Amino acid sequence: MKGIYLGILSIFLLASVEVVAQKGGKVVPQKIIINVRGISKFHNLKELQDMSKGQLIPLYKERVKILYNVFPYIGVTPQPGVSFADLGIPASKENVSALDQEIVNRSQFIDNNEKFLDAILPYSDTKNIIDAILFYEEVLKMVSNSTQK
Image 1 (tube, rainbow, N blue to C red):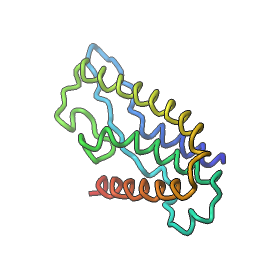
Image 2 (image 1 turned 90 degrees about the vertical axis):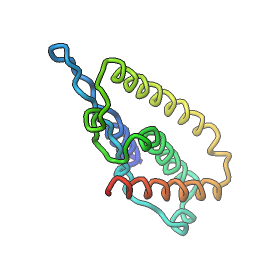
Image 3 (image 1 turned 60 degrees about the vertical axis):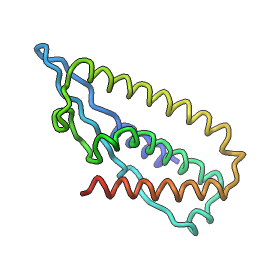
């Protein structure tokens, strides 16, 4: 269980954007980080069927959290660690502020979604949770492959 929490924490930290520093009135470009390497193992159907619902729920929640952290940036770039400057986006106060606000909004959304999932997932069919985990893992593999090109 500690491993799952450490994995989720490391994913969150890796998926977060670096803090903007103000030096001499210039805005230092933030990094947009896309990272799905926080998943230590992708599973197959048999492995998931051998798990209890109590083991499946944290896997499900972890994958949902990663997807919510990655999806907003796929249209911008599939590469990890890309800055505004790398993309030709001006690192203006407005753009930096918009990204900062997006990070806050996404974090609040993820926290609220996790509370919702905590309430409803125990009532979900185990088969549905397994199917969703397999689907999410396939999507994450595709995103991971696109970042390696």
